[in-house]
Amino acid sequence: MASLPLSPLSSLAGKRLLLGISAGIAAYKSALIVRLLKQAGCEVRVVMTEGAQAFITPLTLQALSGEPVRTSLLDPEAEAGMGHIELARWADAILIAPATADLMARLVHGMADDLLTTLCLASDAPKLMAPAMNQAMWRHPATQRNVAQLAADGWQLIGPAAGDQACGDVGPGRMSEPEAVVNAVAHHFKPTTLAQPSAPHIVITAGPTREALDPVRYLSNHSSGKMGYALAAQATAQGARVTLISGPVNLPTPQGVERIDVETAAQMHQEALRLAPQAAMFIGCAAVADYRAASAAEHKIKKTDDSNTLTLTLVKNPDIIADVAALPASTRPFVVGFAAETQDLAHYAEDKLTRKGLDMIVANDVSQQGQGFGSDDNAALLLWRAPSGTEQLAAPHQTKNQLATLIIHQALSLLSTPLLEL
Ligand code: C5P
Image (cartoon, rainbow, N blue to C red; front, side):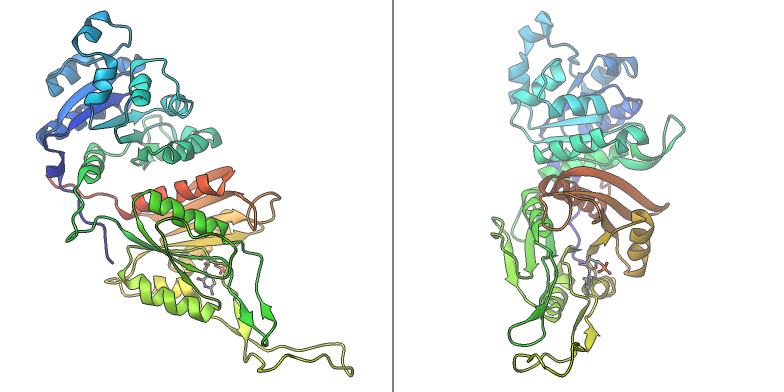
């Protein structure tokens, strides 16, 4: 697989990082984050919400960062030293770890009711956050809407990880480990050089395929291509180099995306297998026709008077995504598939994940009105393989653009779960 390059912590040297800490039990891990950032040569200034101070003391973080910790917007003494706008300008990046559900909701609404949210509004610097909360809170549609909006606003989300939680639950919502958080920040600062391109190459199939029956007729389906095109646009926005293999659709090519037009499943298969071995990720979003005519008629098929029926012989098309997933490990990209189901979403999607050998699958319920085929909206269940089994995330009804942001974010974080280099 053409994997993402590793993220050396050396890219952090000399960088000025504002670390925001909000009120989660994972706040105790923030102390280690400060240590790792300092070891890597970062200048770190810590801002804590009021609630965060119930979990870890400002004094601990002051001792580790070597700088006074800011806790209040209305602190005349602190403002006289470095005003909050000055602090916002000082930061090369803002990292919030842990980010609670409440803080995320406040950021989505552009609130500025404490120092941390004010700094986030006032700063143009890149922003990253490591969410941490109970698994039910993370899965809640309100939080998932906020996740999609934050990603659309340019926030880079790190994690959360899944597993045992402090409250006794098991599931997604734990803050990513400090090493993974720091490595994600380092990855962010890594310089892009031509010799070592940092942008992962993502190949996406989109739209329907058309299988000719004769020179004027074909078999196809209602796929509009909107979801695949939204994925291509969002993957580009999140820094990937994207090639879109597109069936016939009526959509403009997203900016910065390389587009290859195909008609049939066989052509899409050929292009996919040509490009996938050099790619970091392959996303099969196309609604590929399962069958094609055994042989397309050379001339228009004529109506006959002697029969009310017409028999067509169809043969199976290749399963493009299954063939990509079956590439040898050395060339196999991270593979994301889609599943359109009308019932028992999780069960059929998990079966498809395993049967086709995928890494992640996005399942949507096409029996629901106002989402899926042709619509601008969609809801989906994301499932992926994890060491502990299959993990899932329910993405509620939202625009295809918002959903695409979430899918790309989840797939990229599974692809690039960073390795620590100390
Ligand atoms: O088996 P099913 O068509 O439901 O699987 C859907 C997934 O498989 C999608 O990711 C779709 O793009 C992909 N697929 C494919 N080639 C086919 C059929 C489906 O890549 N011939």
